[in-house]
View (cartoon, rainbow, N blue to C red):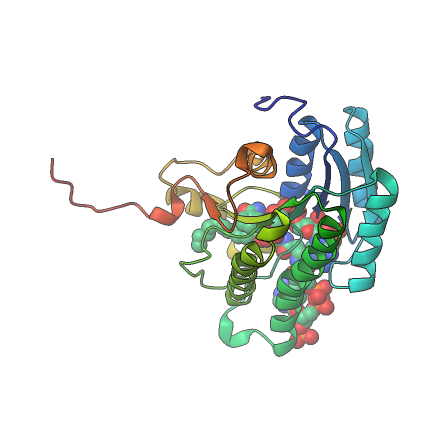
Length: 267
Ligand SMILES: CCCCCCCCC/C=C/C(=O)SCCNC(=O)CCNC(=O)[C@H](O)C(C)(C)COP(=O)(O)OP(=O)(O)OC[C@H]1O[C@@H](n2cnc3c(N)ncnc32)[C@H](O)[C@@H]1OP(=O)(O)O
Ligand SMILES: NC(=O)C1=CN([C@@H]2O[C@H](COP(=O)(O)OP(=O)(O)OC[C@H]3O[C@@H](n4cnc5c(N)ncnc54)[C@H](OP(=O)(O)O)[C@@H]3O)[C@@H](O)[C@H]2O)C=CC1
């Protein structure tokens, strides 16, 4: 379904980290269908290049480059490549990230550091490098961080990831204040359960075959999310329609984080 005009983001240039797979791929596609030029990136070159070919076939102007967001030099190369390719940057989607489920008493220091480094440090490196370009251009820009629905509620089994995402949340609120004078907006969204290959490999395989059905039972709207729904939300936040929104966090989880509500109702 097409929600937004193909001119909404015309002449805008967007970087999507982790844009070769799953949620990032869908977000990138929706930004592209709304007129943005894309640079998609991830560690695996062959994955981002295959997705680029799919987007080109849809008529979306796309470039692909491999980047490990944990490496500041590679991050700077991503920014330079984008500016060389398209002349500017207007939109950043910090989607790259992940974790592995484990009892907290069993997470090794190395495992803890790996998740914090990938999610929190990596997101800062990309955000800082892109914001410097926004400031240099003098054009402002829109940044959206893909966080998690249970940010404020906690999630047993992934303490490292919840800690990292809350770190990004604190960083985001601070940068929204610090960079408002440059008209840089920075927001976050918290997806509930969206079925992707990455999610199935990392989460469902460890948690058991019925993980998805079990989580779905707790969702008031009774289903998992559709990837397009994330694409639409990020496109909105990246667009002029959201020019007065910054520092905000929007949960998109079918009401999952509300729980089932009170069992007593007064009617
Ligand atoms: C409630 C309502 C729900 C609501 C519904 C919401 C549920 C869904 C929520 C979220 C879903 C998703 O995120 S879905 C997306 C998932 N996708 C991903 O996670 C893919 C990306 N993940 C990764 O790349 C990795 O997991 C990550 C750790 C971050 C990066 O790893 P590195 O390559 O740096 O790691 P390595 O160098 O291999 O290892 C470093 C250390 O980490 C440990 N380690 C790494 N992977 C490990 C693993 N699978 N299991 C154990 N330990 C692991 C190693 O043992 C090492 O520790 P030592 O042994 O001590 O040396
Ligand atoms: N699916 C879900 O239900 C939910 C997902 N999320 C979050 O949404 C995001 C996307 O998840 P999803 O699409 O499901 O899973 P994927 O595993 O498909 O997405 C992770 C993406 O991030 C990239 N990536 C990971 N680490 C790095 C790195 N160091 N440098 C560059 N790229 C990196 C991966 O590419 P490569 O491996 O090639 O580097 C991959 O494209 C993640 O941050 C995830 O935690 C949040 C809530 C729920």
